[in-house]
Length: 162
Image (cartoon, rainbow, N blue to C red; front, side, top):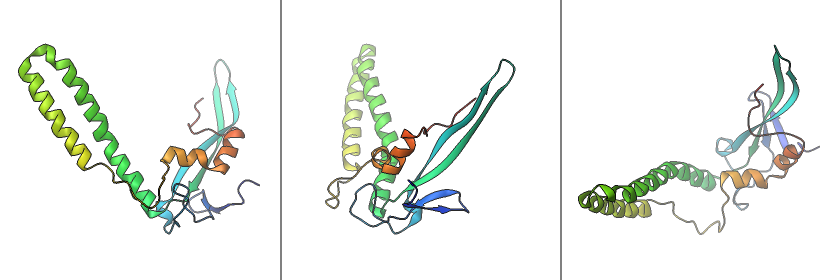
């Protein structure tokens, strides 16, 4: 059975991994279950599409991936930094559009983009020497054998709609 590596938590209705080794760096031990990453998967049981009536019944399962404290902090920092990077890219695009409106705006845009670059460089996530390689959230999900087996069996990440 594919769930032999998991314990079912009845109170929270989720599968918690028995393995304590981190599923993202594969080196450290996960000590706190609050740091684990849990993902919901869905599988359609029954779908009815009549002209006057639509019905959908599906199963839902929440499954965890062990994550050490270092990887948890790494993922939290990336989630905080990604909106900053997104807006920085929007701002840089805006800088290349604004020269059509005048030289003063262009010079202010260049200076502000340089300041933004140095701020992003200063506060970028620091690379850790231990571990050498760390997976992102999506890479950790795709490398988990149980989740891969569930996807082959017809489970999906997106909640089905009628």
